[in-house]
Length: 222
Image (cartoon, rainbow, N blue to C red; front, side):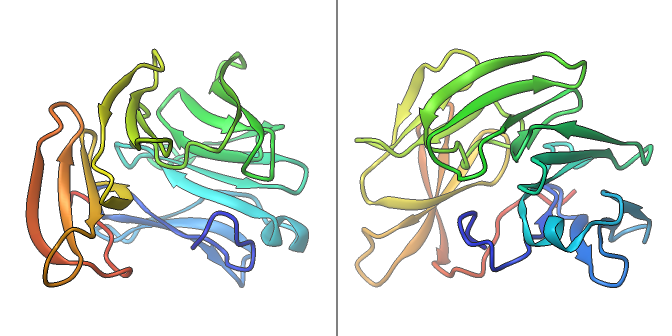
């Protein structure tokens, strides 16, 4: 779903492919299910209709252990540790772009543009990451890298803001396959669009021979 389209209620598949976060309509709360064990954890308390309609983002950590569910209603984010079942509530956080075990990248702004983006630690402290920028919706799951769609489209290091890699202009629709690997649509193919992998550390381009389809999601299954 599009982050800008509130007509759809988002789900999230964890990076290892084994856990799915979704809205249970009957319980009216977000749940996460481990597809191997069948264990189900609540990610949020029971939500009001306004909170459900206002869901902005659902995301999981790189290790597939932590989940964050955000809503524009009361600008609230729920963060859950799947292993322990503990859920904490962060106020004035309307979007979560990614998280680890002790922090998340988020924003109090609900519109997705012209927002201040903060590095929010679960001990209650926060530091400004960027201001007056479009949301960093293309961050790696471990928060080390993000993509900026300027001219040219580039990979940046989150900790320093340093540009580490410029990406070819014919690539689009980027998604992170792992901590260091991007998968993108390559329009520069003679017989139709294809997918290509990019090593964020070296810039190496690797053809993976998979035809482009909007229904494909990449990740590592462990």
